[in-house]
Image 1 (tube, rainbow, N blue to C red):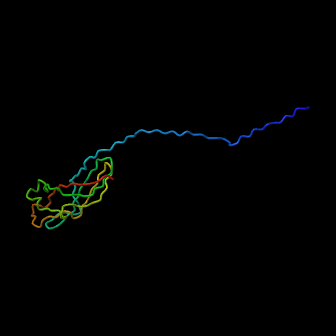
Image 2 (cartoon, rainbow, N blue to C red; image 1 turned 180 degrees about the vertical axis):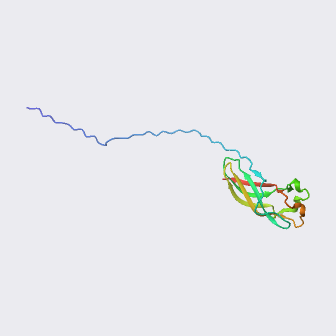
Length: 153
């Protein structure tokens, strides 16, 4: 008898398999909150558009520097309780002749200042000169102490 050779063919079922093992870890990460620095108010600028005269009003200009590493939005400018002063060349004029046009000396604003940036805020007709102001107030430069308040963002 003869030998019969039967070839065996193995067929793989399922094709290629991909395996992945899940890996995870736990622990903690860190971040640090920054510190704020006060806003700096500079009173060295006056509005060239409006000037005070007895019985009249003028714009008040406030320059603010934001030394923080984040933007700040100014929400209010408030006259402080310190007296308004007059430059030395006009000593015959009194800062008491000036008053704010808002009853509570608070001006609501919404002014954004970039991180490290500067902003000039003009408050239209914010200050009033008493009608009794005399000639000694002509050309006088008034310094009005204010506080600005803002929030990050």
